[in-house]
Length: 251
Length: 157
Image 1 (tube, each protein chain N blue to C red):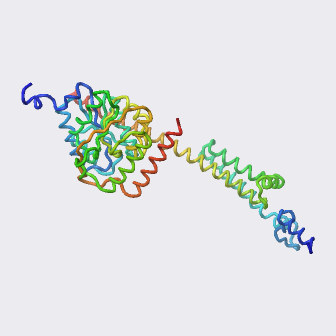
Image 2 (image 1 turned 135 degrees about the vertical axis):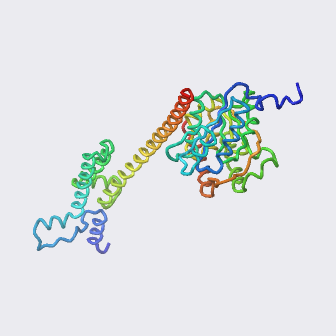
Image 3 (image 1 turned 60 degrees about the vertical axis):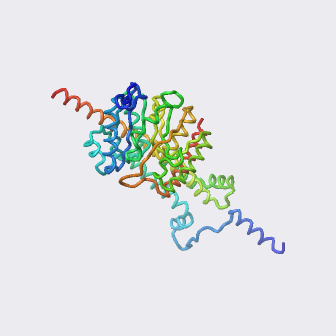
């Protein structure tokens, strides 16, 4: 193999020929969306099996315009419906257009599209149905990209998840995750409304999907504010607990 | 037991059997006397009739769907029946262990209110789900139409 094989071959060799669609949920992200779109465009130029779609959750700012101008395909909700429904819309689109893998990349620029590559091996190997890109999995790697309140909430939720599913996921609130088609189809029909990141892991685990985690680099936000504050964090934890409990009672 | 008569009357009062009724003006006409003696019933009946009339009128004007009016009619009918048939109310109050029968009326009212409110929560949740599905479909269709338009433009050019 020539020494520069890495440059000759497409970057994402493990992808093979299967289509991967990146779903980018975005709400009021006019300041961040363009760079996310450009990064994904770069990626899909290198590997034509990758495409992506921005789902604008009824933003009142120029999120849609900016994303369109950057050259993205944009689906726009007529009004704000929350991250859960937004991701689900994107999944439905991806599945309808023949995606074998669906990856969620947040529209705030925290997730680095190049890192998608790192999430794929467990799916290709068939050892997992969902791979979560986590911030905490390795000490010292990417830890600067979080605030301590987030970290604390994250630890609590991590313990809760371990209790509910018997699985250890160190960063349960990470939205950066890849699903294979079966898991994506399940999600497209059963996605929780609000604060879905943790809930969906519980639901998937309970339905026999295998979850793996892979450490990835993440950035801190460039523009805008995170949607997490104290009250919401408390509501978040309660909601997750209650929904998981209901999930348990239903079956 | 130095005053058995007094004890007896106290017991009667507790059971609500000889509780003094509203003050009635002896010099007034019999009709006015009737209203004075049955104030609570008159108010309850009026309230029920007005509410029933309101709901009926709103259904007539298509401002309430028929299926959402039924719970209201059942509520009004029950309250009306219990107000007019004092014996039923007394039975109910006895069964519930309520000493003063009109209190049972409030209990019945609260019960129906709660049923109606829970029913509304169900309706709202259902509407929210349907609404989200609809908005999602519209967004996906819109994207599909744009996609089609683009490819049409490209093939035309």
